[in-house]
Length: 284
Image (cartoon, rainbow, N blue to C red; front, side, top):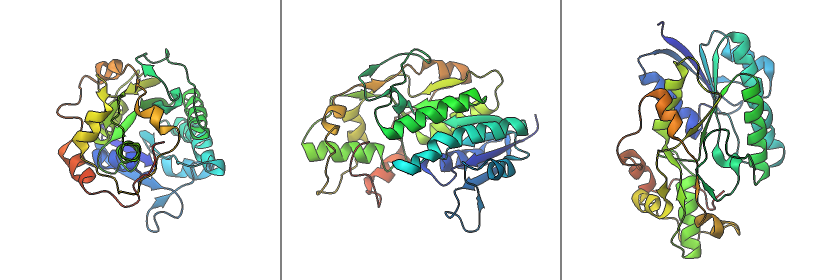
């Protein structure tokens, strides 16, 4: 097999940067083109994922296109989530490339969620942000993309999941009782490239460790200590006690390997040990 030419959109974000790192270490990948949003990389390759012409130009010649270009916001910002995935998937199809959309199991709502394989969990987004993600993922699948849906992604670069949950627990003086689906960002990146080299991949795959993880243990293992002035969103108390995990066994059967070692890696512990600048103050 010839070395793959991989294009990653959203390459400066938490997930996209991990895929770029993994691609540059993968023996099956010959070239990784890191594509960022306009204005974020003065000397790099940029494209607005809402613009079909810009996207077509950056994916030309690719074997695999990975879309990690999403925003956390409201209003007009959600257009990136709603429109971008289909634009990217269609451009990839025209280029003859496989398209992988890095989605989110947040589209299933606030829970409780306890199991359920792909296609057996109702999409019930609980926020405008999740509505935009759900719409984008659906259109991407219709255009031929494979959607990977993790629940909670942890590891170096995480400014939302662990920091947000830890801030909420500290603000409310609560020990979380929920169990959640979790995957390390580097395992997700490796999985993305595993799927990229495979034929006949299902259009939707859940991505978490095989077994759910108690949120309290996850926070203890991470060792993240939020600033003393943290505040919690009004809905967070219930989320700390609401199970949110889905059946992710199938994806590991498809790729033939599973993550090993602790959920919170040594690299992740180093990251969480020093609260990152701009870490989330609330759980989303």
